[in-house]
Length: 476
Image (cartoon, rainbow, N blue to C red; front, side):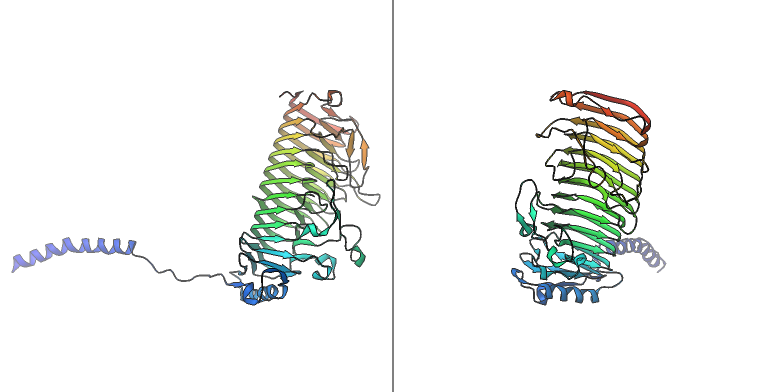
C-alpha cells in the first residue's frame, strides 16, 4: 500500500507540471473572441435618396445624411457619410457638421454645381463643401471633389484665362467672384486625407481661423491657365500640418495669410508642387504676424516663382525654416506676378495707408535651384529684413524662355515693376545676412546680362557675412 502511494505521488509530480504547461500553452494559442469596440457609424448617401447620376442634384440627400450622421457621432468617435464608388453626386453647397467625415470612395465624385443659385447669398460662403464652427470633421476615401472650374472660363487663353465673374450680384467686386471648392471656418480638429480635389473655380482648399488641421496625402489639380485657383490657403490658423501632398495648379500653391489674427506653427513636408504663380507664398494678406513655420523636403517644378514672402499690411514674420528643397522656376507671362525668382523675400507697404512689417530669423538650408532669375531680398525703410541665413545653396541661372529680364517685380502694391539689372542676389534694406557654402553657376548665354553675383547699396544693407561663397560659369 505504501509503495502504491509513493507511485501515485511520483506520477502526480510529473503530471501536474505537464498539465500546467499544457494549459498555459493552450491559453496562449487559443483564439480569443474580439468584442466590438468603438465601431464607426457609417451612413450612405444613397440610403437617403442620392442618385449619383451626375445630372440630378443630390444636395438634399447628402445634407440629410450629414445631419443624421452628426446626431449619431459621439465625443470619442466620428460618423462617416459614404459616397459609394461609381457614382457622380451633383450638389449645391453642403454643410459639414461636427463629428462627421465625408468618405468619398475611390471611383466616386462629389461634383459642385455651376449655377449662382447653387450657393448661399453671402459670397463668403460660396463653397461646394463648407464646415463652420465644427469639431472633429474631415474628408477621406480616395475619391474626388470636383468644382468644374473649366465651366467658369469665359475665354481660354494660354497666357491667362478670362473667367466668369458673378460680380453683377453686388456680393463682390472684380473678376474673382467665383465659388471656392472646400472650406473649413472656425473649426477644430480637421483632417483631410487620401482625397483628390480637382478643378476649383476659385481657391481650392481654404482653412480659416482653425486649430489643429492635418492635410495628408491630398492631390490638388487646377487648370494651369486659370487665375486665383490657389491650392491651399491657410488663413489665421494655428497648428497646421501639410504632408505628402501633390499640388498642380495655376495660382499660388500653398499660401498662408493673416487677415484677422496671427498664424503660428505651420509645418509642410514631403510635397510636390507645380504652379504658374508662387509655389509657397506668405501673404500678401498680412495684417497680423506669422511665426514658427517649417517647410521641408519639397520639390517645386517648372513654377513661375519658388519661395515667396509678400508682406504688405504691417504684420511681422519670424522663425521660418526652409530646408531640403529642390526648385525649378521659369518665366511664363507678365500677367502673373513674378519674374521666375527661386526665392523672393519682400516687405513694403501695400499703399499709403499700410504699415511696414518686418521679416526676421529666416533660415534657408540645403536648397537647390535651377532658375531664369536671381534671388530677390527686399525690405523697406521701416520694415527691415534681419537675420537671414542661407546655408548650403546650389543655384544655377540659365535662360529657358524668351524672357530678357531687366525688371524687378514688387507687386502687389509698392513700386510695381521696376527696371533693374540682373544679379544672382539683389539686396535692399537688410540688417544681418549670412551666406555659408553658396554656389552660383551662370549660363554662358547673354553673359553680359548675367555677370553680377550680388547687387546692393551699402547705405541700406549692413552686417553681411560671406563664407565659402562661389560664383562660376555654367558648363554642361
